[in-house]
Image 1 (cartoon, rainbow over the protein chains, first blue to last red):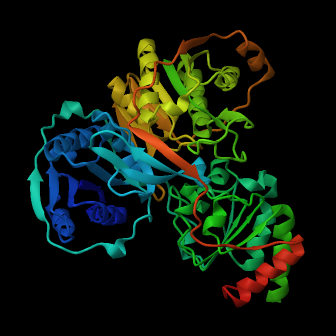
Image 2 (image 1 turned 30 degrees about the vertical axis):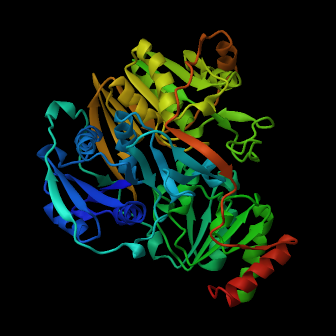
Image 3 (image 1 turned 60 degrees about the horizontal axis):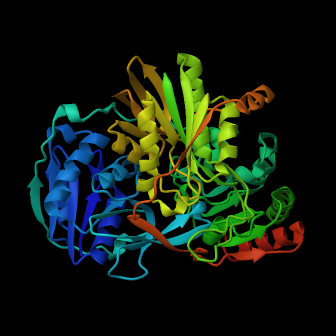
Length: 321
Length: 253
């Protein structure tokens, strides 16, 4: 099977998930290829070509300097028509989410997005992905002739298996016209310097939807105080304005890996898990025993957080005094 | 400004989920349903844009007969009218098939702007809006946190990873997928609920599904990466057992 990885780069560096994607391609392909899209990307292509693959395509055009969905789709469509891979893999990043469904549609295909594993059978294009925000898993199979398209969840393929090698670099110059690109992007920015750096915290107590009301946040805040931990939250809490955005952990917030991450009333949707599953010890307190957070937790208490959290704060104060 | 909002009906959050007899989807018989949360934010954004720039908000939904309840709720919140693409077998369509159903109806409305949530809480493919844009030949942007209308164009704030954002401009008509938290959701008023009863819902039957390019073969409980130690008993006992482990096993206290 000929499999092509579309590698992502930002600010002159390859995205770490690009390496995971290339590792997946090495695993699944009999003929592995990678592609990079941009305007002056020779250096990045050389970096990618130091890994085992048949070839690395450097898709270059001045109009591809900044990412746009229209520009990337047009350029990659031309590359895929030339190289005719059976399967195209992409890292499941925000950028991929913006253009990959459009690219797949050009080939009359639906993208298998956010895949967590390949299989179960080899020889077919089948991937495992999560449904219902991680509460169920499913095997999804692509039918008919290729190219098929799948994007891969962060951390689902490991880069330690990535084999070194020496791939041929081939330049591909797509035909592009400025009028085709309808989006005009401006420079990326951050809202404000982060006042809270959760990434430096050793202990984090994080609160989710289970808290129910803003007025009840102090229950969890008191546990954080007892532990001497930073207070964090899942996205819905920050969306509702119950805690500031800078305290958000997850794909759109901060990625943390403290010694202890204590998740209170957080069900564990994947957008949250990617931001904290690297924590050394994970504790979950949730009323639903089937909540996905228990799949990554080391310790858990199933119960009413309004009873469990004050009891836990009291026990912690007892051992600390 | 004519704004079309594509909404989906999904099982109520935290519903107990059981796999169906065929093993390829959930058993839906005992479930309650509600609007997909990101779609609720897309609807709210459409209503706020209408309040600012005047015009019309049309909700469009593909789904079985039960989806009508969710459509009525959208009308009660302020959508002017709705299109219901009825199909008893939504699962027979892949994302491309669903987008084709929506594109056929959306095209005949010639909207200035199409909004939808960035992903659904059930399938979570996160593609429908982008595929819809491609099928209709329209520009799009995704994961949007702010929309400014500037004459015949829009400037949007797109969310990137790790707390970064970017502004992007594009001409209208366009398609945007809306991120949760872009605005504050409103509740339907009693007056709104009353008015909704008289608002038009145009029903069309879905075209027969084409052979899907992607198919769910099997659905099952996820395999656990770790086996969590769960402490039971009354809260005090469970808390004491947990603290013991945190102190002596995990050594984080």
